[in-house]
Length: 228
Ligand SMILES: [Fe+2]
Image (tube, rainbow, N blue to C red):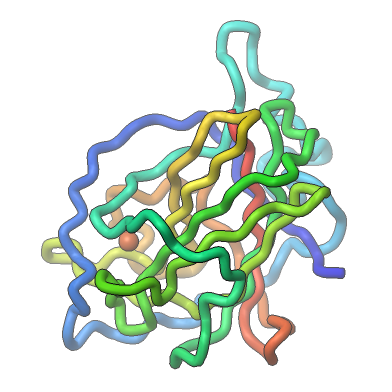
């Protein structure tokens, strides 16, 4: 079974959508691998994260008036399209570095896996372009009985947002009947544009490691989500 690693937990806050890119960004550099060691091993939230020895420490830190300690949110961006198909294979035959993302969706207690949660993801291709006419690199997956989800894609490319590139990222909308819907983005350690990007939140940055994607060697990473 696949290993589960670092995850991200923080109280969300709103930001305006000021994204202006995604048009293909001709001449955009190719995204680097940004491969780092994976936390790997073990199960559950917070492995290798800020929780220290207790994977659920961050959840337990919340006070009685602080509400749920949920995965941090992030801007929707201008390229969301409703109606993406249920399909765990976003990679299709597209050129790029294979990337397997997997994780578990939890309820507010950070312990209860949410079966049947909908994970709706979309991203740019390896050249930094979004498919705004069809559903390439757009898809939904549903968590299984253990709250787990996974999808195969390719590493997204950089694209210009104004005068600077955004780091590689995957957009998420996660929803479940027992939780508050979340809109966020997933980033990857080592991306050179993370330090200058105004939208990145540290809790949303995960390590990637080289591994078996199920369709050959590529990158693998884990992104657990807690809904409020
Ligand atoms: Fe984006």
